[in-house]
Length: 463
Image (cartoon, rainbow, N blue to C red; front, side, top):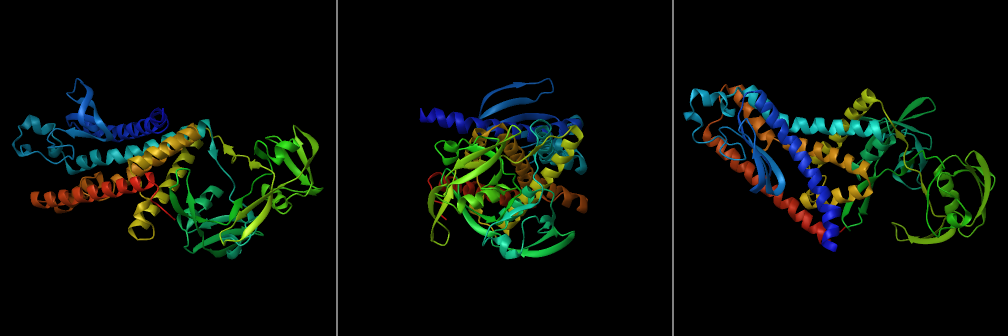
């Protein structure tokens, strides 16, 4: 029974996601190759023994293989799935040269190779655009709703009501962008520019490093801003058996006052409640256009903070409403998706750069097991989260494939760039050495991500 649960909740979502993204990537290579007159011999999803397949009229074998962790397009003249030239490529007949990948111009070959990552990028834009047209885009104004006492934002000098304009050199449009920048830079001092009293002010803000564990026990270090978005005091959920449930609070209620004192943000509600454990209070709520008074008593909750001190606060058992969703028309959705994808590009590229610069540990890289785990988590959260995750992974495949490593698309593009400058391709020995170096790097990466996956799986990643 447990195996069936893992299969349904994790393996199946992973196979759906990965198969679709690999198909899209290889379809980019295939389409541009065919447009340039190249014969494609094999279009494979997966590696290893073929499970099933079929031949089309153009002579291409479309097949699914036993190991669904990638795919490839084998063009006429290729020696193998890594697209190395075959030994007989120089002995082809004039007719065969017309359909050979290696007898196309350097520009045509570069276009065919670049098409795979490019289509992954375009695919990310398109599915985000579809998401924004249907479900909408999370769009919270970049206004500081509350500053956490003792947090990074307070130490920097930020105040409630500040509008963030720029952060770490990036223009800011939504509060989600502010949180994303902080998330990527734990312990690093960044310049933040806010609008206050019709003027702009710059501050130095250092996101506080925070170790966060997911529900599988995996530990990651993120930067914490120390401020929260402007959230209306609307009840998003009511916990069963809580003080809120006992008082009669309902999802959708808007809290307008506590003990006669007006509140305008959820953080104000939280501050009053936390300061009054076991103290009777009267909430004024707006429900279906009518006001109602509810008596409530916050319950005591004791916890240990980051300094090791024991604290007692009040809780009533309510959660915030989800961030506001802004649904766009077709053109606006496409434009918003382009901006969102670019933001994800900067975030992903920053994380990759931090790893190579030694600012972020390589143990943060996940492999197939990690992707399968996250695919299952996203699928269980809902379709919106799963489609968003698919867009992020599609973008990651694009960027990783463009790294200038032989065996990857970026390595081939590097060779073609050198060929364009020299007027002739690199010698066979140089290409062979490059291929071996690329093979070593790719295998090393596979070992690293597999080891990381196993450590995560067996809980060996501590804080």
